[in-house]
Image 1: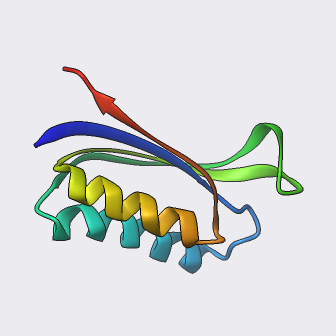
Image 2: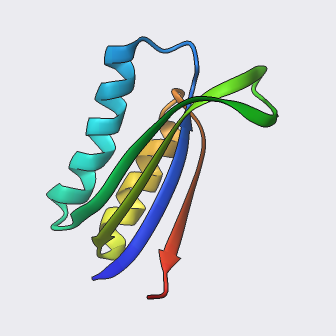
Length: 95
Protein backbone atom coordinates (compact mmCIF):
# COMPACT_ATOMS: atom_id res chain seq x y z
CA UNK A 1 0.00 0.00 0.00
CA UNK A 2 1.12 3.50 -0.78
CA UNK A 3 0.53 6.82 0.93
CA UNK A 4 -1.82 9.20 -0.91
CA UNK A 5 -3.26 12.65 -0.38
CA UNK A 6 -6.44 13.94 -1.94
CA UNK A 7 -7.91 17.39 -1.79
CA UNK A 8 -11.36 17.91 -3.14
CA UNK A 9 -13.64 20.91 -3.32
CA UNK A 10 -17.39 20.57 -2.88
CA UNK A 11 -20.01 23.02 -4.08
CA UNK A 12 -20.55 25.84 -1.59
CA UNK A 13 -24.35 25.71 -1.77
CA UNK A 14 -24.60 22.21 -0.26
CA UNK A 15 -26.36 21.66 3.04
CA UNK A 16 -24.23 20.54 5.98
CA UNK A 17 -25.64 17.00 5.97
CA UNK A 18 -24.90 16.65 2.24
CA UNK A 19 -21.31 17.74 2.85
CA UNK A 20 -20.97 15.18 5.65
CA UNK A 21 -22.40 12.42 3.47
CA UNK A 22 -19.92 13.21 0.68
CA UNK A 23 -17.00 13.18 3.11
CA UNK A 24 -18.22 9.88 4.56
CA UNK A 25 -18.69 8.38 1.09
CA UNK A 26 -15.09 8.95 0.04
CA UNK A 27 -13.74 7.88 3.41
CA UNK A 28 -15.75 4.66 3.16
CA UNK A 29 -14.38 3.94 -0.31
CA UNK A 30 -10.84 4.00 1.06
CA UNK A 31 -11.63 1.83 4.08
CA UNK A 32 -13.77 -0.63 2.09
CA UNK A 33 -10.82 -1.30 -0.21
CA UNK A 34 -8.59 -2.09 2.77
CA UNK A 35 -7.01 1.32 3.16
CA UNK A 36 -6.53 3.34 6.31
CA UNK A 37 -7.10 7.06 6.72
CA UNK A 38 -4.34 8.82 8.62
CA UNK A 39 -5.77 12.34 8.47
CA UNK A 40 -9.11 13.82 7.46
CA UNK A 41 -9.33 17.58 7.59
CA UNK A 42 -12.45 19.49 6.65
CA UNK A 43 -11.12 22.95 5.91
CA UNK A 44 -14.52 24.55 5.47
CA UNK A 45 -15.76 27.07 2.97
CA UNK A 46 -13.03 29.12 1.30
CA UNK A 47 -12.73 31.46 -1.61
CA UNK A 48 -11.49 29.88 -4.84
CA UNK A 49 -8.52 31.35 -6.69
CA UNK A 50 -10.67 31.52 -9.82
CA UNK A 51 -14.26 30.82 -10.73
CA UNK A 52 -15.16 27.17 -11.31
CA UNK A 53 -18.59 26.31 -12.72
CA UNK A 54 -19.83 29.79 -11.74
CA UNK A 55 -18.79 29.25 -8.10
CA UNK A 56 -16.45 31.67 -6.33
CA UNK A 57 -16.27 29.60 -3.12
CA UNK A 58 -15.97 25.93 -2.28
CA UNK A 59 -15.94 23.57 0.68
CA UNK A 60 -12.41 22.14 0.95
CA UNK A 61 -11.60 18.66 2.29
CA UNK A 62 -8.10 17.19 2.66
CA UNK A 63 -7.60 13.47 3.25
CA UNK A 64 -4.33 11.60 3.76
CA UNK A 65 -4.57 7.84 3.52
CA UNK A 66 -2.71 4.63 2.83
CA UNK A 67 -4.31 2.36 0.24
CA UNK A 68 -3.76 0.40 -2.93
CA UNK A 69 -4.39 1.78 -6.40
CA UNK A 70 -7.85 0.17 -6.65
CA UNK A 71 -9.16 2.38 -3.85
CA UNK A 72 -7.76 5.48 -5.52
CA UNK A 73 -9.23 4.52 -8.89
CA UNK A 74 -12.67 3.92 -7.38
CA UNK A 75 -12.65 7.18 -5.38
CA UNK A 76 -11.54 9.07 -8.47
CA UNK A 77 -14.29 7.46 -10.55
CA UNK A 78 -16.92 8.42 -7.98
CA UNK A 79 -15.66 12.00 -7.77
CA UNK A 80 -15.81 12.38 -11.54
CA UNK A 81 -19.47 11.42 -11.72
CA UNK A 82 -20.58 13.36 -8.63
CA UNK A 83 -21.82 16.87 -9.45
CA UNK A 84 -21.21 17.98 -5.86
CA UNK A 85 -17.42 17.75 -6.39
CA UNK A 86 -16.19 20.69 -8.44
CA UNK A 87 -12.44 19.87 -8.27
CA UNK A 88 -10.20 17.13 -6.90
CA UNK A 89 -6.59 16.06 -7.05
CA UNK A 90 -4.91 12.87 -5.90
CA UNK A 91 -1.19 12.95 -5.12
CA UNK A 92 0.98 9.97 -4.25
CA UNK A 93 3.18 10.75 -1.28
CA UNK A 94 6.77 9.60 -1.83
CA UNK A 95 7.68 9.30 1.87
